[in-house]
Image (tube, rainbow, N blue to C red):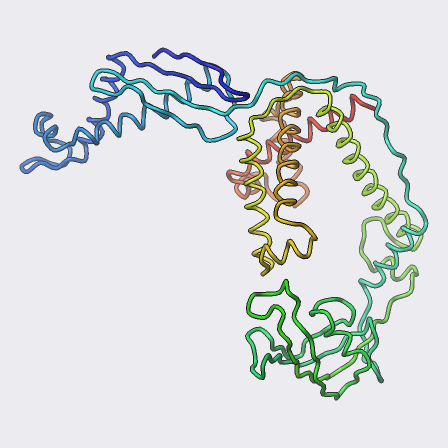
Length: 424
């Protein structure tokens, strides 16, 4: 098997693979023997007929297809190994020569481009100083108290923040619609659980009230209801208000947080939690700055086809997410204030940035020999087992094929650590 690589446009190569007569005829013979195992000839057990009789039953076209499929897969893998190619898209191929005695395949590949990497050490970009302020600390403590509030029955009218227990049924054009009914539903007024206008009309209601709530479904709602006027028949059973616990030692201890016994230790715990979050956010911003700098200083020629393919993938992902929310793309565009053309352009810009980041990161890993060994993977699995109090074998069983994903995630984190440590 002889190969010849020719560079075409940016990131595009063609590799011509020429087989000797012996190689191709050997592949044809191997294909025939495989197909012959499934041939049944009268008077012989399946796959046991003499070759001469079996050849009469196996079509030549089937032999060619079987041999060609095997040869394509095998030669493609060898081409990648020989030229150290990293394909970024599914390959194309042509077969300019095909007969009983000759075979020539031309693989058309879009591969990772050569990169001229800019400086990636000692960039002196500079960190931003971040710290937890008193307002953030107090807000988080209040949030904890509200999350642990209890609901108590309230005499009188419901206010924003109160919870009403209601039965409701919705009607459009005088007819009940599917999914518009509920019994003993707990609705916090002001939570935004229901469509705009619904909760506001329950402010001022009290236990025992029966009322009509008139609303208009937004244009970004499900197709059957969007833009329609609706009336909900509502019965109010109870009104409840939140009783927020005091910030005292009893409350702090009752949260069952590690090493928290009183208000002082709770404040320390929450401070540490907020500080870690701020530091992680600053670390992410810092890495983004490093990558921004590298994209500007590195030379990367990405084929337009690669960018278009990535942008298309991003579009498909968004379409699925929008559909899962029960929305149309038209409604999404209206809500986000974008045109289809503006969104398409954003996909292309983001795709180019993401691909360049990916190539830069992998080039740094190659230059710095950053690889994830089996020992590192074993260590990560041991940490997961300890974290979830499970046997390591069970963790591996649950991960299954996702161990390769774990390996990629660990590798990415190792590269990010390298960038941060070498650009302090």
